[in-house]
Image (tube, rainbow over all chains, first blue to last red; front, top):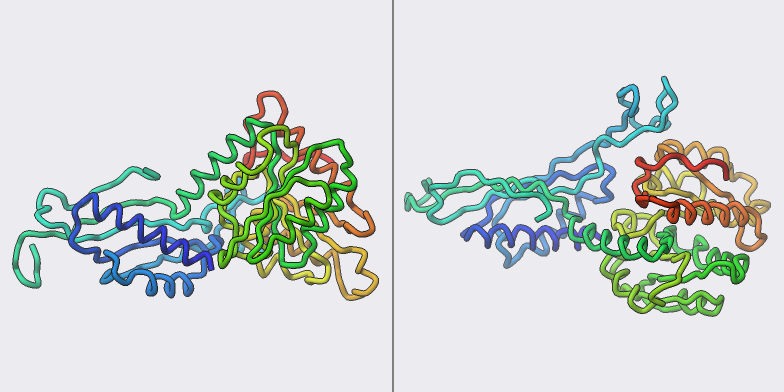
Length: 127
Length: 249
């Protein structure tokens, strides 16, 4: 049930961004969750519904993009079939995970008072 | 412009964050790792199902290590301090972390526990995680290596059922082989094949803490990992994809 602690991190991250911009409300969140991230999306959604009450995310929509696990050969760049042995059939190299282990807060859409001058903003990662 | 009431004084702003939701834990884990490396301590995150034999393995490791290396342990448990007590009785200075309802250790808990261990002179630090093949996999603790244990009574398909956990393993220990005579259907070759479907570079040691089978290979792997950690100019290599293969064992 680590999904509960992940949602708490999510809420505090969103809260931080919302406060920094003086947001009146948060409308939408976009997450990317990999098939090998260890996060169960159904549990994440349950935790989200539970913990977002009385937070800035109370009325927000949560969109979760599921990222499939993609393995490829680091030398030949050939992609491996899912469920296959994780070794390149051509050169024998150990496969490399290209994507599918991420748990990422991609985007927050929020309502900002008097923000006519800003329509889109980008923040540095891991700030 | 607001379409609902026409008040005209607020807007929707999209903020592209693109930050991992584990970033705070990962930052604390890096901090732990820096300290452990600076002390030359090899930290191992030992994970596996409840009852797979993690504590018994550490007891047997302490018996065979004698006074050669200084061992210490941090052990996580939901409700008791029993594992830490067993380890202390086996001569391993140990701190127990009672996690309550938390199903895994995280970097902050390990950081606090580190303050309760001897400050210096630890060669091998075993972080015995909460018995669980799911949640502990996603939390970096600052370890140098991940060791995942699976006992022969758990069957051959555990790697396929828990690919997230096994993918993170630098070493898999297949434990309790002394029970094999009672398990005529168990197929080690099938377990190895399943590991190769979830681990790009599978390494396994087959052992029994009770009979001692395979303990030599386990201790040799520990020695090799410690040598790598302390090699001159070693950057410390916890990311397995950056690490050249370890010969032998």
